[in-house]
Image (cartoon, rainbow, N blue to C red; front, side):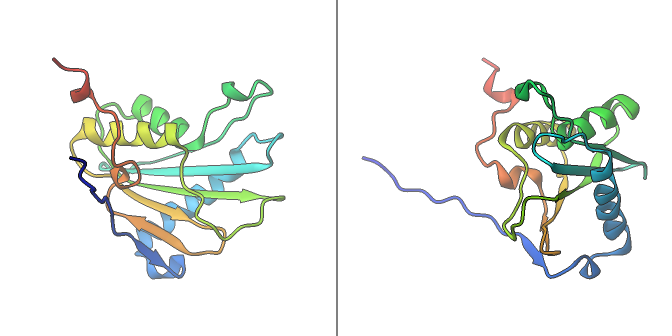
Length: 163
């Protein structure tokens, strides 16, 4: 017999960055600045990400589009890869994401794509400690989640591959 199950999660929706601590506001500002590094000539949708590492270092990245659309890379994956290369083995404590666009006007949540969610979850699984996620919405509100795994509840992980 089929069972109906429910998955839900809680997150904070803050009215503005002013409700955050100084170091979290700074991380969001760095994500906003990283939007200026984006290469987005096709979509005009610039995304910046900033990661705070346990050692206090901050790593930023942005999206890079390509005329062959599948060849582009999202800001979240660029930033995680850069952090991993520059600071191998260092724990990610928080990640902030911001976006900007000259043509997109929305107050909806602009969350990471599915591929980025998977990469973020695997990073969290590998380090065995949650990564806080801060998403700055175009309205100025901030979504604050305790763990990136909250936005991809059935993520694929290494334990799925073991026999």
